[in-house]
Image 1 (cartoon, rainbow, N blue to C red):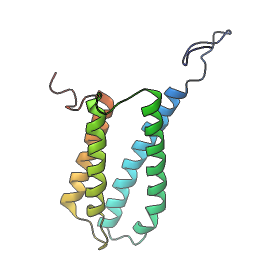
Image 2 (image 1 turned 180 degrees about the vertical axis):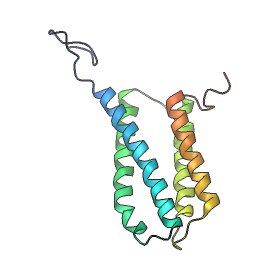
Image 3 (image 1 turned 120 degrees about the horizontal axis):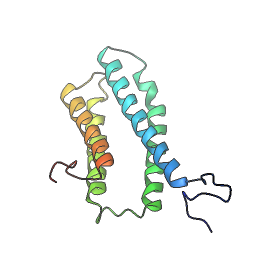
Length: 139
């Protein structure tokens, strides 16, 4: 049985589920960030269609979680061992709470919460790329 990412008998690259899942997860993450930016800007400008995007946001969130859990299993990650993953999961939970408050039920944008949610998204992406809870800043 060949290893993932190895080449086949013709010299071509074999299918790498791990790499493709990682690329899909990254694409979904960037899409999720774009959706949050669009929703915040639209809400700030008074657009009435912002609540209609919830199905799209929920779908992207479900796919993001499924691909994230798949990568967790494929790569044998453990949040108790991989501190960057624990920090990322805690930041994602915080993002969910703060983003809900930022784009709340009143139909207006709460700017401080919106900025805080964007900063948490930036931290999540930074932790993902650097594989460091401190974003590689502490050595």
